[in-house]
Every structure is written in structure tokens, then in C-alpha cells.
Length: 391
Image (cartoon, rainbow, N blue to C red):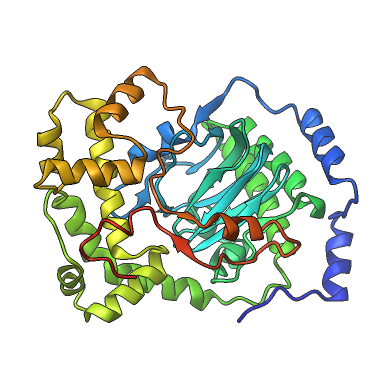
């Protein structure tokens, strides 16, 4: 396994580039945010912005400006409703402005505290889960890797190295104490000041700031011994599952068993189950049930169709069983959900968890000094109701 190796030379290099370590992280973070003058009125709800753009494959599609595919936005995340586990073709950098959260990546739950930074590549299923009483606020950078990779320079791909090394032990969270998140946030705000980059000068400035930001990440992850083959392997595995994702998107109303899903991908049942869990972080049954309930939630919120019609559209022949599954996943009946979502009053702290949560003791154990400790077990809320309960 690749490890984050510390060497005196690397530490000297980091120090030479102004990456200082402070012993007063809390007060420093507060002071930095005040001086950065973060916007107070331009935050957008993460769920409303992202969830509608996630397809059956769990891929989020962001509407970039084609000539300059980069965006910086400010988001709020609360525990009223959670975005599905998803991935995306673009690369993502998140700075936690306020609150506390967990970064749920595949089957890992990483503590994400105020002033920390998270970087996420294009092959890993993930989401941010609010852990504080008030909503979490985030500064987010999305960018297409081709913006950097295809600028003609022979070494352009080197800027993207940290996003290509993300294996099962990769330290996605960069703590505030390293000084790197503050420098990255400053460059994110500089990028935001150039948007929309409608002029040649603006696009040049934006690319320059983006490369400066990426150099900060390259320097920080220089000691990490991951390999680009990890990225290529994950891409290959995703391609093997693509026929199934395509089928789910086109046939949401059909019921599909594990053996049929495996046949769609041309694999044995045992191989399919192992690969699907490794790629998405979830069993197929859990993924499929949550996908269907997500579709039902959208129909409940946006249409006047009856419960019977909606249950059939998402593949439940028995309306009563649909209600049981819906309640176990979302935390309330379909009728209650429709009423509350329309009244904008989804305040029950038990719901709606769109994907399974980890055991509380697993999440709690992650607050130790080891930042990338892995959880011990899943506790999927849907495990008890599926006739094809397989892990």
C-alpha cells in the first residue's frame, strides 16, 4: 500500500514554499476567514444545486462555460437532505468555511473541519455530510482537467498528479494546520474574480491562478507514493459497469436482480458483486434501492401523480412495499415527504438519508489523531428489506 512518507527534504521544500505549520489552528482559521472577506450572500443550497444533475450512473454533470470550464461557487450543506453518493468527470477542490462535516468517499468517512481542504478526482463516489448543528458552508472549485492538460505545454499533466494518485488510502483531507488550505482558498477567490472569463486576458489570468493553486497541491502531495495506474484501473472498472448504469437509467421502472445485473456486465455474480462494491463503495442492492427511491422523491416533489403511479414508475409493483422501503430510507412516508418538501419543512433530523450511514462508533472513531482512519463497518438502512440482501 502506498503511504504518505515524510522526509526531511520534502519538509524543507514545503517550508521554502511558504507552507507554515501553526499551533493555533482555531484562532488562525477564524482570523484568516475574516481577512479573506468571504461572500455572505452568494451561498447556494448544495442539494438543490447538485442532486437534480446526477444521472443513473451516479455521475454529476456541471454546466461549465465551454471556452473556460472552471467555476468557483459557495455552497451550504445541512442534514435535512443529503446528495446521493456521486462522482464527476471534473476535478473538485473544497474548502470548509464554517461548521464540521464528514467527507464520505467510497467506504471511508473522513473528518472535515473548519479551514480544511478536500481534493477529489473523477473516479471516486463521494459526498459531504454535515455534522454540525448549523449548516456547513463550503467554497468549491470545479474544473475540467483538459483545461490544464491540453494547453500545449509538455509538463501540463504534472499539475494534475494529486488527482490521479487517489487510491484506497489517499489522504484527501489537507488539514488547516499545514497552511495549504488558506493559500488554495486565496487562489480560488482570485479565480472567482476573473469569472466569467470572457476576454483573452481574463482566461490567461484564470489559468495562471489555477496552475498556481495546483502547484500548492503538487508540493503538498510530493511525498505520496501513489501511482497513476490506480486512476487507470478505476476508469477501466467504471467502463465495465457502464452497460448496467445505462440500463438503469433507461429502465428505472423494471426490477433487476443481482444475477441479471451481473449478466448485463458480462460477469459472474460473485465477481460482479465484488467489483460493484469496490467501484461505488456500496452493494448493488443498496445502490439500486436508493436510486429508485431518489427517483420517487423527485416525482413526489415535482408532480401530482398518485402514490400508486409513482411506485410503479420506479419499479415497485406493491404500493405498500414501496411505502415500507421509502420510509426505511427517507425516514417518513411518501405522503409526509411530499407535504414537507412542498412546505419546505424537512427538519426531522432522522431523515432523509439518501445513502446508508456508517455505524456511529465507526464515525466517532475517526475523530482520532489518525486523519485517514477507515470505518469498521457499514450500517445500511436498507439492508433489512431487500429480498436480494447480498454484501
